[in-house]
Length: 348
Ligand code: FE
Image (cartoon, rainbow, N blue to C red; front, side, top):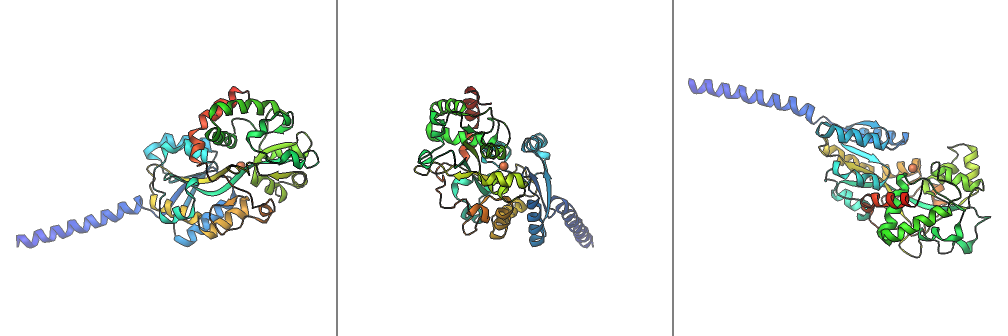
């Protein structure tokens, strides 16, 4: 009799335990994933909707500037609901890596993303190149032959170059890669040469540099690849479209390591409450379907093989040599040095 009562109590306990388990797991492992995104593309939201339709995993997006998102994740610490931090520069992801955790190491991720474009904490989801634009009527083929980032500091470009400010992360990553390949001392001197070659004190975004060349304010500019395609597409208005037609892209360092490459990437946040779903989302972003969606909306290069960029990007030329030798993790590691040498040279 006593035994039977005990059995009954145990059974009751088991049932209560199971009930409690489901109650907690229901909230701890809700089928969702929380993204903190510094990418300002509406098309990314459509992409997340596709992921939800496929997997049933709800995607919650908090968007903002990278600095604000990073501050919030760091301040909230263990209480942060962030699973993935998505931003558009390897230098940013690298500099934020103490707030990220390892785990982006599945076979699907490793086979999709070349090793120079990922770490265990963050992986590239699209590529961009930082290249040179020139005015064909003022810059000869002979001047361009063999042009490298390093030779932009040559006095022959005096008063002819535009590039944005040293606080810009794309420039910091470019200069970090130059330091990695040439040494800090050489790039400190190079920065001085760059400053003395500038046609004006740095101002504006990447498109403003292309516009300056089109307007005759400078002969060459440094800017990312996707901005020319964006301007040519007409999405930034007829004036920028017309200006974009006046400049030509040039891919530097073709005789050496190749053109400087950067990424849009996703980092796995430390303490992510939905880690498994976050990994699933990264794997989806690297699928052929998602990659096609990304490149056709942002004009970036696909991260995976077998996907063609947008036709306007194809027209810029695809047969250039990419720098696949310099691991993008160096952009974060050398970021402080990069800013230091630019600032010391008087690069505004
Ligand atoms: Fe950009």
